[in-house]
Amino acid sequence: VDDGKVTKVDGDPNHPITEGKICGRGRMLETKTNSPDRLRYPMKKQNGEFVRISWEQALDEIADKLREIKETSETTAVLHSHDYANNGLLKALDQRFFNGYGGVTEIVGSICWGSGIEAQSWDFGRSYGHGPLDIYNSKHVVVWGRNVSRTNMHLYHHLQQVKK
Image 1 (cartoon, rainbow, N blue to C red):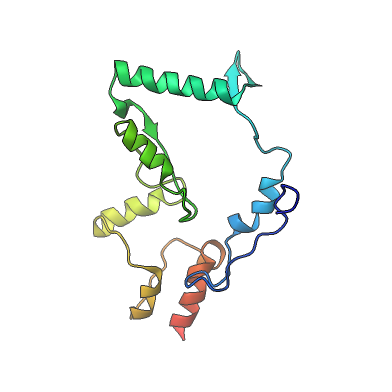
Image 2: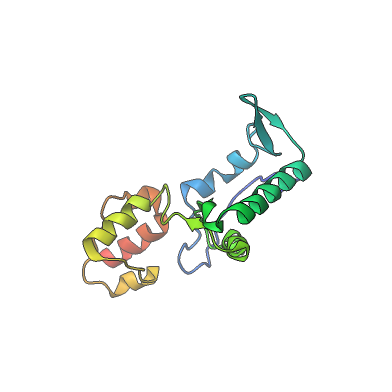
């Protein structure tokens, strides 16, 4: 970061899984973060147009709406759609918030991998996978519906090693 702008994104070569490789989303972080089209303040739709509002107004309106829902309905009337691209420190902060609120309705899966989770549950039942390095204990590896070299270069490197 230089003068408040992201100037370069690198992976950590000492990380046991990624070994310094970063995905396409990570490689685009500099471009996305510095984009003039990036939203930097709250917007509210009024009369079919988005207008800028203050952070104070945005947070007050959200708090008022959540309070209203809790008083007039069940907290499960709130839908929480989430997905994470990393395991950073703030990963589960939103879930902690909504659990403190009283629990809400959550979507299982995501836009990125929801269909894969559903297909797996139909084929094999619900499963929570092994750690990534457990691939070295596999006799056979099936990659189904994914171009690992483009979408999961962390796994791709390990697949190449296992293949040897």
